Length: 356
Image (cartoon, rainbow, N blue to C red; front, side):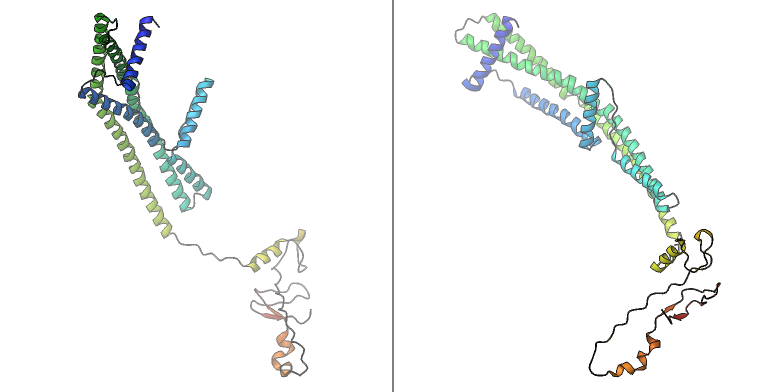
């Protein structure tokens, strides 16, 4: 840095400290300029915040955004470009529905409905990807250009204006105190101050009066949203009509009769498939031939009356006869004897167990 430049920096710091601490008066700009500065600051914050919130709207999952940013940063460091696509929630949900619909089977109406809904959601995800591309190209990129070029240039002129004002005020203050500051130096500082003031005013004016371009970009963003929601509404309308047809089909389909198996049925099935000879009429390799053997449930245990020193008249009652206490079973199906010694019976017959 040249000596003149260093002296200018010292003058700016000196004037700044005198204004903040010593109460020195600097050159005051008019209210219109102050208002333009305020609106420019608001526009700068607006552009930065609008880009951030638009990206959050298009990609609402912060974890996925952080992962994509990490992958992008690693790929830049390694020199390998890796494409990372944001997982749209409609696509994730649609893939889940379609997958389980295929697992349930295409002959199931509910499975067919799941597959229809899944395909519709995946179509909406594809439209969402198109929305992302359109918004980034027609809305976010112009905002980024405005931030990195026009706003940056305006902020540069404002910063330069502030520095030149401090230098001009410092030299003028020193001259008034008897310092050896020539009029030419004061004149040169004033000319630079006036030049920066003109550039800053023109830059802020052009930025703040550029409503046509900014409204056009906002209109393009609204058109992208409208087109996205219009296509999604058409897909959802078709889906609702399809699901209504599926509901009518499910309601008109006759219900199949179903008789749940009992524990006895399961036991008989196990007995008939274990390959053990229960009746002596098994075939080759333990294969049973003929109907399965009857199932005799065990007789309920008869409680014995407590001992009593007095005779009880109930012991001689006909209701306590050996015949009434004998164990029996009821046949569940017909059985025709095929071998000597086998007992034949019909369904519903009661078979008394005479001897254990």
